[in-house]
Amino acid sequence: MSALTSKTTIALVIPARWGSMRFPGKCLHAIAGKPLVQHVWERALQAKGISCVLIATDEDRIAEAALNFGADVVMTSSDHPSGTDRIAEVALRLKEATHFINVQGDEPMIDPLLISLLAKTLKRDPKIGMITAATPFTDPQEVDDPNCVKVVMGRHDEALYFSRSRIPYQRDAKDKTSAVKPLLHVGIYGYRRDVLRKLVRFTPTPLEQCEKLEQLRALENGIPIRVVMTSHRGFGVDTPADAARVEKMLRS
Image (cartoon, rainbow, N blue to C red; front, top):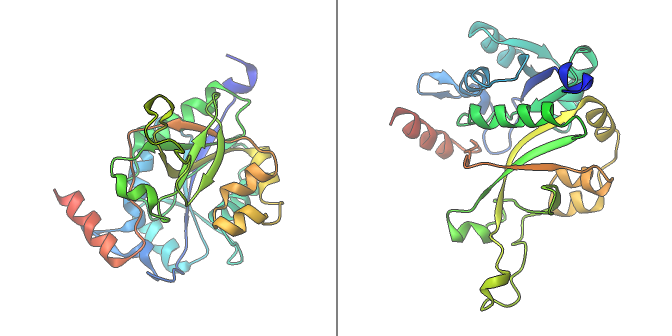
């Protein structure tokens, strides 16, 4: 084990905001008797290899609720355009952390095993600056759904590209030897401290703005993104209907 790896300290940060065009205040929406963000926090606490779990918000109502159920809270600026920027502000205060994992506050079904896998991979390989996850599609119809982000990987498990379109395109559908199964991107990220600091200093890039995918900013600026495979699909809550579906899943 290298000296850097032995000193690796990973902070898990859950960015939680009030504003949402389709579902304002969703982080505090009650699901199975608990605020949505509490489900995320409780699952994050089950992950291994994490030094601390924090909720980062700019909203007093979220902060109060989080403190009531026992979470550590960091108040951040209301000017952040993304969760990554919010985590970068937390990093300025949390000097002892070498790495950060970003778990969105609307992912109540996040798998602790996936978080543990990202933490383990970051600790094992200090050269990794940024990491995320992918899983094979189980529903063929979702491959053409722009809300389901696709990723293609190189031979060293690094992302080549993310897109809302079907990638790769199978030119010869009859040639089974060249078939590549499409991969669904799972929206969890890990960052080495210096890469996180660098990433938020970049301005939005053309491909990022075209696809509306923030992770493309890293690729366009030459930051490699390691991709780990998982069987976890995840399920984010974007609408009240999503919340009802998650509640049914949790109660069953």
